[in-house]
Length: 332
Image (cartoon, rainbow, N blue to C red; front, side, top):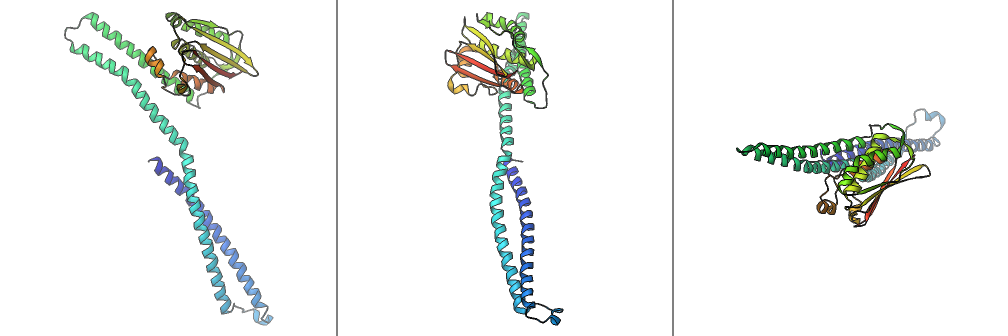
């Protein structure tokens, strides 16, 4: 069933309910008004008849004709009013149906985009694996060294597929409202130290200096997801940095919030791309093409969902070729 069909059916359902209410209300109004008119005519006629003759009293013909005309006229008035109400209600009901189904329509569109993007990302490593395997099978004189080379290349592509599927699972986990995180009191300084230790090999490969200024910060959060959040942000700051650059990690308390900032002096993000960096599968062209950064554009989307699960906010400020600052605000 298409969304247009669903809109029409929902509108018809609204209209059916309104029609039932309007018809019942009109019938009751018609009964009340005609009863009052008939009672008025009867009282008027009774005043002109002696009491002994009132027992078998019936309205005179001219009053009965008048009563029929009044009933018919009131029925037409009510019917006309009902038609106007139903036309107006049908129009309003259609717009209400459109508004009611809009979140579903957006969800379907988002799902279609996700499937298309995911299929595109999955196709690349799968095509590489298939092509290299076919080449190896067709080569009747393949050596052990060549076979090992093909297997190593295929293993790299399989690792990419695993990384992508892991990202899918993480994104689904943090978008699922039924999954509850385990909130406990955590040491932010300890988390950042562990993350810096884990990503330091990547930093060293690009000669990036990581400066950790987080000291003695505690908050209520999910330890695992907060670690993943910090890892994603620092990893991005390293990947999109310049060689011999620097990544700075800051944290401060403000009112009942902890504000964490990840600052790099790297390639930056174009202003037109900045509003999309938290979208799934989004990667800025400059970063992807010029710097050949591995990834699928899911990291910041996962990060945003982690922050939302913690009832916080995440913002990005950037200037092309000057660097980027990611600010995360989390309730203590």
